Amino acid sequence: MTESKKEEKKQASDEPKNEKRRKFLLAAAGGVGVAWVGAAAYPVYKYLAPQPVPDPFGEDGKALVDKISPADVARPGTGKNGGYASRGIIVLRNGDGDLKAFDSKCTHAGCNVEFQGDKIHCNCHGGNYDLTGKNISGPPPKPLTELKVFEQDGALYVSRLEPEKKG
Ligand code: FES
Image 1 (tube, protein in one colour):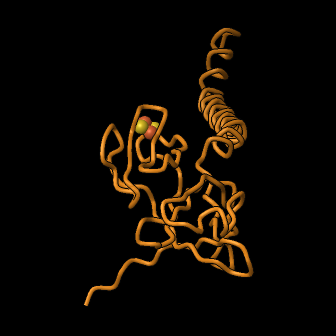
Image 2 (cartoon, helix red, strand yellow):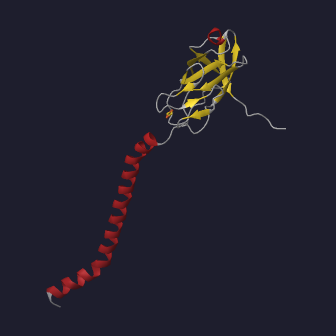
Image 3 (cartoon, helix red, strand yellow):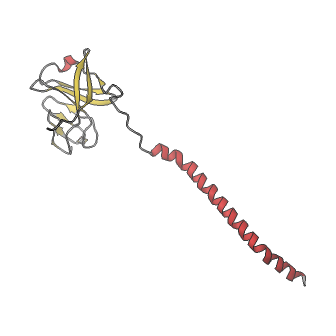
């Protein structure tokens, strides 16, 4: 047998081993690549993923109203913008003497609406709500979110308005 024939025979017998090695290295490189992409993408996903919105009413089920005292809304027809749990709020006393509160986030695009005596107005796109929180003109598609408001220990608090029970 000539040297070249021996070499060809050796190469032929090594080919299955080389093929196995090649497949193993490709699989290992693929696994490392997937792990690297996962490790790089996870922090981005964590940053971009929507965060759960904290409950503004907390464990007590109520939140203190900032910048509006009971005296500010003592008379019918009075109202004021304030805040609760890092959000905006409008508290008003309507003509019937009922105390009302609305989250001041406009239902159109989320701007802060403003109490204007006879209506609630949004400066962003000219939306208007009546004093029951109902959208009456402009782009807002639905009423403001009403909150339950009450006085306790000389301060105003709000809580979630329970839906009226039918029956
Ligand atoms: S955000 Fe209020 S009218 Fe557009």
